[in-house]
Length: 224
Image (tube, rainbow, N blue to C red; front, side, top):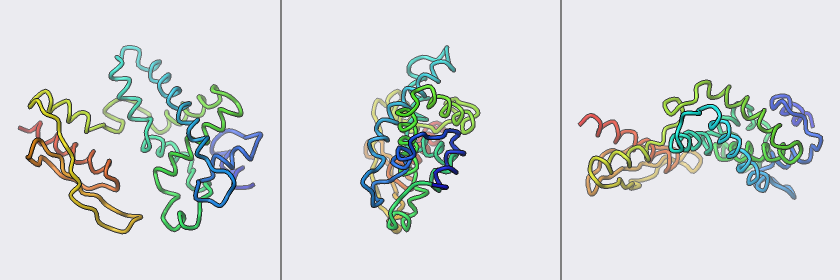
């Protein structure tokens, strides 16, 4: 119980229903009758609305395309994991010993899912306005300057737009290999234009490696 009280202080919200909070912090690997998957589903929808509304109000001159890119830069696993880290959610989640041994408390996917679930739980108990206050406060702390340059870049989309305009073709990605133990696996991915390899990079996931390869490819193409 003390663990939950400590988390509530970090969160700035006290649950009337502690079982709801426990459910939100319970990963499916933990031996329990409940887990946070359903609340995660709800929280994802709530967060999508809150972030979208916030950006709509903050950037009155931005068009739909820019707003969509801004939202996509925040409403994703990496973006929510950053907000979760601000709350130190990893210290409070309930996970199995196997996940504990597998560094589950620092996994972006687990942190992101728990964050979504907690926001879903607050929405169920107190409504949208309470979630909005917490999320906007966190956004301002984690992203003091919100713009396309300061947020996570979607390099793959930018590269595709550039290659379509410049060469009339879209890039493809090829996994060159993977190395390391399961909990620290690294993937190497190449980005190709036709048959030509433009760049390659490594990352902790295939998506991360693709983004890094796309970033390098952009830098090289812009130098030409």
